[in-house]
Image (cartoon, rainbow, N blue to C red; front, side, top):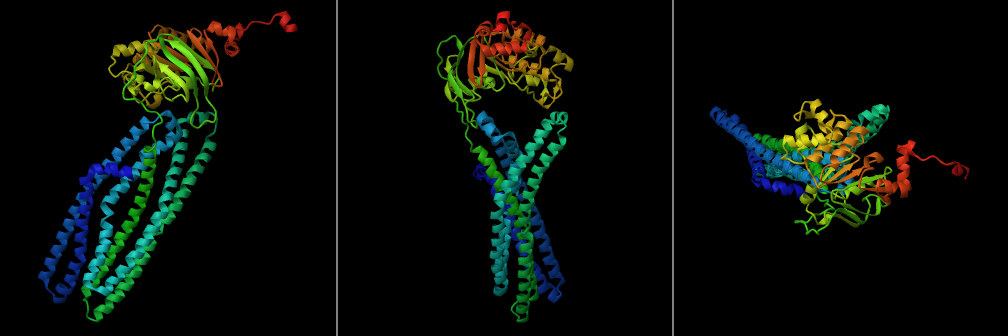
Length: 580
């Protein structure tokens, strides 16, 4: 809850005025039974019409004042709760953006979405109710007891005994249900994950006719959420009947005591009505308090889940200023680099070393899972090497500020991701000041001119994730987006896999003409054969480095990859070799 107090503290005035106006409303409500008692004891008993009308006017004024106070309190409560939730959501979003890939991998997308939406909405709702009712309800309950003591001591003792019993029941249910609400939100994470996975993978699911399997899997997760909701719901449902039963028992005892006191002449009939009205007010407020406790339980559980994410520190820190670079011709240097993912038992990279000169093209190839993407992810510092060092332009990547490192590098990831908006908006991610001429030049180099023309220009709309574009079109536009940035280092992580060989060749030729250091990760030997250097990986280890010609002579793994793609070039065995 520390996170809630932090942002609620920015709305101190609203947080004070909201409950204050609710207390003023409650104070007016406490005077109503006394006015009603006065009407019965004096106005009706004496048949005084003028007195009745004056007291009726007082009731009208009390109602109008209560209405005004209620509206004012709601305004301040809404301002504070919505503002606090909005700031929490922004802070959480910013914090998630600052986390490294290591934390993002461990947290998962589904749970972060739930915390940004459902959890913070629950906090907002609970905070709004708390500001309005958390003080009002107890004030009415204890105020009713105090007012009862001003009427008759013996009858008031019924209030004094009933309140502690009721509070014990309410707090028992509250303390029991808080951990259960946390489990409900955890089950909601799983349901959201299943729904998200189905929506994003619907084409694959239909292609393999797995609809029924996915429905069964979703039903299992949904049923688990339902069971948990029912369990906590049954517990919460005890509040109303238990409080009703206890209050009605108290009301019966009160009426009995009141009747005896009237017969003895200690109090009047109007006083008994007033006492019963105070008991009725207690009933209403305790029911409100019961619902409030449920909402606060949910809010506390959800606030704890949000705070848990906020307390996760990023495993990656950046200096305030970039360190001093040494003069060098090397753009990227890997010096005995090893890397292990946080949840992995074995190393993904082991003792990788290479040097890439400025302006060179560096190819990386290897079997699936050999560590190709991991290598290039260490250059822009998506992850930090667990052993060894990675240098960019004569300086360890850890010595760069985030801004300076990002300026140097543009990454075209394996999965081409575009965002909802126009093509121009997407192209300007790399350089917000880029002109249309600069964008079109980058588009032309990325072999995407026909895509722009076919869609009607740079103002053409791109749907979320680029759904209205083919795989090849998305890849070319993401490459163009990186080129608009005009970086010193361009990383293309298997980003031309959906392109035909001719388009791929034109793209590589266009990129090679640029004055930048290029890393090409590919499964195709044709995409990297003209690179100045090629790194061959096998199970995270270096299996060979050199040019295409050198590797064809010295690296068996590279030969196998090449001949598997160009079997017609595999040398035939001589007769002697066959006999042997």
